[in-house]
Image (cartoon, rainbow, N blue to C red; front, side, top):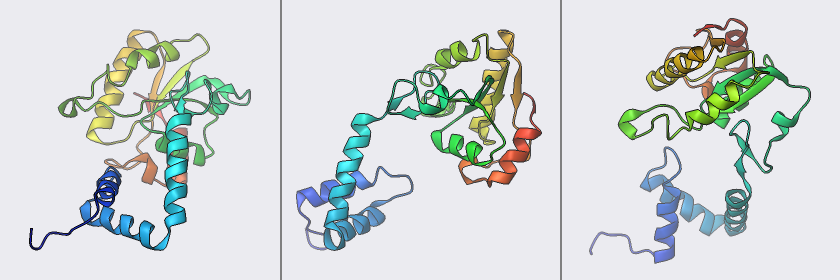
Length: 202
């Protein structure tokens, strides 16, 4: 046991729980845990309370599959959005970046992932049937594939374009204004706005 850190079991559990965050290893999670307990116990309690509230209160919108507190989110319910355009993104963070470009006024569908066969993520896991049902509604005239320009994102876009075209849908893809290998969450809003304007057939 010499040389090992002796920590209360509840502290160990907190450190392990924090490791679920992206990019956080054991050293980082231990530093976070120590900071919260030593310097900001009220913040730790608030974090625990709000996290539990979010987990229990957030659901997926029935139409766009994004996060919502209601069955249908505010964006899908808005009369100011153009229902003829449906933009398909991988994550809610990508959706936020497209919105920040102020160059798109249509609606969305959030995949909550991308095809990654080696990780066991296929069409069934991403519920492509839900997307196809949404995209084939009569009021949808164009489906914009705004998946990331990573190998997985490109594979997802190609797979979806084949499925959608087979159903007679008009399909476009973001133009290459978005750098290859990039993720929308980290691309500036101006670049996304340009890519939306210059979108092409997928």
